[in-house]
Image (cartoon, rainbow, N blue to C red; front, side, top):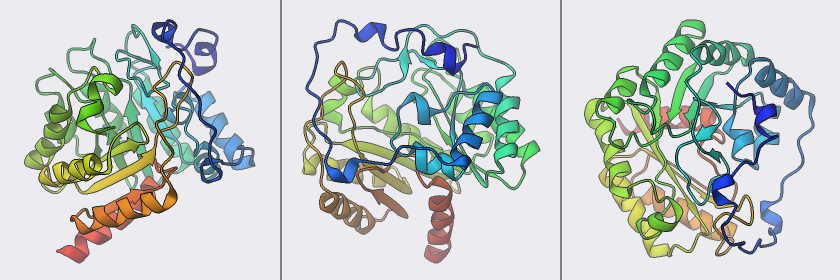
Length: 314
């Protein structure tokens, strides 16, 4: 597998090279974060490098990397650093991936143990080139983490497994504690923002998880600031509740480069707070909405609150 360090020597987005430039808006004060630099951050970086693993924290340019890595929390991105999709919002490389690294699940499990994670979040690139979309690789990672760190809870953030019959069932059967799949945006923006995906397929995927295992927590998230309306966001919430999704995350879209989709506007903290309040009123067990909210941000703490909310509701 190409290492993260080596991968940065190549153009990240050759498929976007001819895209017209879009404007980069100046970030408001509530978006800005401190540069990482604590000793714990560097300890986490060393474990990631020593293990020859990829993290979505780095690949997606997450603004929370300093905070999370300073707590020795990292979200591992399995199956390489190259995605078969070309979403307009995403900073992960697009292209033809190499073969699966069969030793990667062991290295992920070892890194989880070294970091002493109480809650591990595992995501991946889209692998439309694989017959099972990478489901079997997810299963191996889950099983090896269970063997090495039986007390660690596991959250998976999976691709949509579009046209991959049986893939979802394999991952659910491996019993992750949380099954996360992001809808990313409202249906009207899918063609321009997430052209390789289908909104109602993603929604149905999460609904199917609950049908297969009603005890499994489900989670999904969207970005705002791409041009969606408030009414569209509220409709997505209703769609998620119809699919019995437990936890919603809503965060500000941040434009990686001029070749990516432009930011329509920055949503204010007050608007995010209102979204969170509405989501709670609609029956989600958990809702997190803020400019810097991301799927795996505070995932361990949120999982503990999810369990407590379910017990309180029972």
